[in-house]
Image (tube, rainbow, N blue to C red; front, side):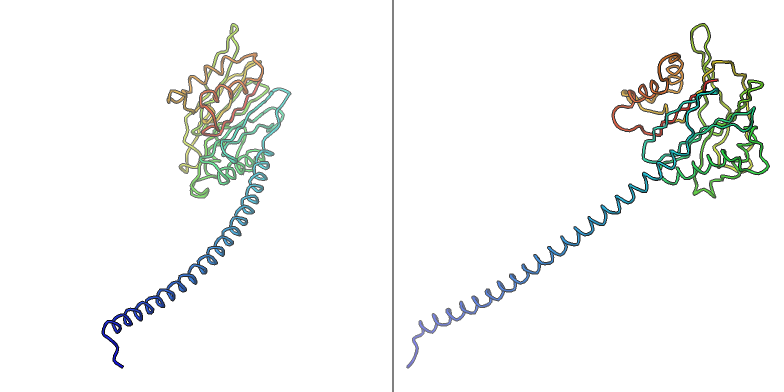
Length: 303
């Protein structure tokens, strides 16, 4: 029996719809498989990320512990305050966990007392390592053929021993002095370091004298010769050794604190509790909240 043309057309359309339906079902199935794989892959990625986060946290905890141990070691290198003359007290507030500031004082012999403060460029482990190494050299007097009672000679020898090419291109500044008890003479030299501040009481006020000798930073150029100066110390004189981070702060008006302002404020603190805490509070009031931009290191010596 012949199939009417209209029915033939309808049958063809039905078959075409069925074919399209099969194709869509196949695509839907493929999409379901893809979706499932995506979910499973995403879960696997999340698991991997979770494992990595655990590993990172463990690594951070280990590094934090090692950094704390390094900080404790550097701190242990600093000398305790002295109660006998020359009497000392100090503050060292690093801007980060590890800084490049360090200092020391010790008797070279029964008549000569050495006092010094240095500042390595930069921060972190590298700066702290160089700082500790230099301090160890000064404490142990381990430079051959060098008289540690002569500041200029000593800095010239240190410069040769710590050239930047052998210290990962790092350098440091230093102020180094030697006080001779029998003559009350303080001899000093400096390598790119801020001047020490000598305060002397006169007529009920503190008179400030800057102890400064111009000299290139240590490690900058081989063959550099450093000269020294001297000053006679009187009973009751106060000497401040400091790093540039002690006064190089930005005030609320955006202007940096001048060194002269710092000296003037320091000279007003005679007889007031802890002069060092007073100065630190004042500097913090200038810089605002948060850590200071650089290490704050201040050493006070009373003769």
